[in-house]
Each structure stands twice: as structure tokens, then as C-alpha cells.
Amino acid sequence: MKKDTITYGIFLLIFLVLMPLGNMCGLIETNTLSLWGRYLCFAIAALGVDLIWGYTGIMTMCHAFFFCMGAYGLGMYLTITNLPAGQMVPDFMSWNAVTSLPLFWRPFSTLAGAIITSALVTVLLGMVSYFIFRRRIKGVFFAIITQAMALALFLLFSRNETMLGGTNGLTNFRYLCGLDLYDPQVKVGIYIATVVVLALMFALSSAIVRSKFGRVLVGIRDSESRLRFTGYNVSHYQTAVFVIGALIAMVGGMLYLPQTGIVTPNRMDVTASVEMLIWVALGGRGNLKGAVVGALVVNLLYNLFTSLIPEAWPYMLGLMYVVTVLYLKRGLLGLFSDMLSRIKKKKVCCK
Image 1 (cartoon, rainbow, N blue to C red):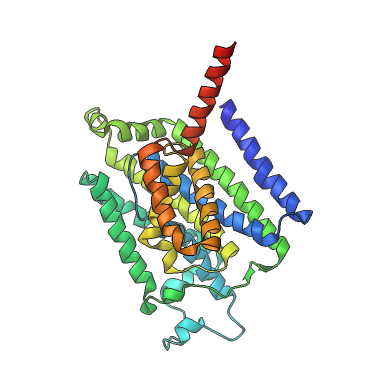
Image 2 (cartoon, rainbow, N blue to C red):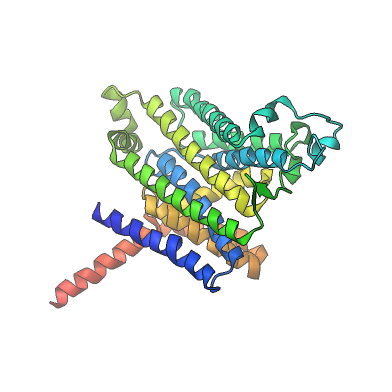
């Protein structure tokens, strides 16, 4: 508990105090701060993946969709509220001869409606997993099913007939609740809100892991058959953690959109979900701090490689996954912990 308190303190000091202070002093550009804000949104989604995969042993390959569910939900609200005066529908609907907002767009006309509707859709889609878990499908087979779901949803959102912007997605919005998203002060405010939400999601995930519910999740990961034998309804626990992880990812997506200004179906394809697994694996599976670290490290490397050698990034991503599987089974945090243990042992031996 003491170590976690220290971790919270260091995290808040760096991201919530020092970086905004650096921005105020002109040492950190506002766009750089927004870029870090996006990385922190990915870290929120990584927490959900770690609860599902790291602590419960369920490899999900559709988690990027739930991230985009939050982004699309807020994007639909912003699209409606940023329409020019007198215009009834977005341009991509006008091109398809649509003159009034489709019925499924109506709940997104208010911010509260957008948040509630996005959460309800996320919960309903997440609960579909119950029918898979009830059939005791797991491992590679569950991963393949969720991969197929991600591909199907990607194709659905990419179609112009779906009235969600097609392959171009949703963009061209400037104001959120009267705040100018291009205003540097608003960008800093959204960044700070992202840091606070990440800290809250981390605390919530930690509470889940430490609870009886969390211990059951670890039991499912380590010996599902034994838990079934002792009378636990494993399918209910698996569905519950799947829905919780999906909702956490949705929250990250909602914070991501105003900082990037666009959401497209490419953000929800299978590759994006695989990247989320790599974040968790590289940072340290079954370690919430590892999920955050992995998301930040991989996205920093992505920014570096796409700036210097864009074509090398897919190979770098594959190499990281192979190295992690073969040599870093406990991830970067596990490696760091082992190094500290060796240093302590050497100090004891020297004494």
C-alpha cells in the first residue's frame, strides 16, 4: 500500500504539476502537452485491457472498438453542436441526400445523453461476451472471435450508409460546451482532466484487484476449472470484468477525441487492438503500473519512429512483441524489479 501511495505521488507530481508548470513557463509546448494527453488516454484503455487479460487471462482483440465507442459518442455530440447556423445535418449526410438527423443520432444531442448512450451501448456490446463465456470458449478461440467482431465493426463503421462519416470519420468540430478546443488554455485544462481521470481509473482498478472480486479474477486466470468445481459461476465474473474493462476504455476514448480532433474507423481495427495487447505485455501483464508504462513507452517509440523512419514502425512493433514474449515475460517493470533486487543483493554481499 505504501509503495502504491508513493507511485501515485510521483505520477501526480510529474504529469499533473510539473508538465503544466513547464507549459506555463514556455518549456513545454501546448501541442506537446496535448500529445502526452493522448498517450495518457491510451494508458486508461490499457488499464481495462490489463484487468481482462493480465488479471483474468482473457485475451481480447476488440478492445480498441470500445475505446472508439467513447470517441464516436462524444464526436457525434460535437458534430451536432458544431453545425453552422441553419444547417440540419453534417456534410457527409447531405452528400447522401439525408435531410434530417437519423433517429440513432438524437440521444447524442446533449453531452449527458452522449455519455449515457455511449456507456449503454458499450455495456450491451460487452455483455454479448456472456454467450461466449457460457460456452466455455477461451484462449486462442476467444481471441479469434473478438478479432472477428473487431473486423466486422470496423467494416460497419467504414460504410457511408452507416451515417457515421465512413472512412473519413468524424471531425471539424471546434467547441465543447462553449469552450474553444483550439484555445491553449482549454487544451491544458483537458490535459489536466485526463491526468486526474487516469489517476481515478488507476485507483478504481487497484481497488478491484485487491477486492474479493479481483481475487476471483486471478483464480480464473490461474485455475478456472478449480473455481468452477468450488461453485463459482465463472461466466458471470468473466462478463463483469469484460464490461468493466470496456467502460474504462470508453472513458479513455471520450478524453482522446477533444485532444486529437478526429476519430476514424482505423482507430478501431484489429491492428489497434493488437497494439493494446503489446502495451500491456511490454509494460508488465498483471501489473496495473506496467499497463500505464507500456502504453506510454510504446506510443513514445511510435512517435519517434514515425518521425524518423515511418516504414520501420511495423517491424519495430513486431520485434517488441517477440522480445517481450521470449525474454520479458514480466515486462519492463519486471525487468526493472529484477535489476533492483540484484543491486540490493550485491550491496548485502559487500557488507
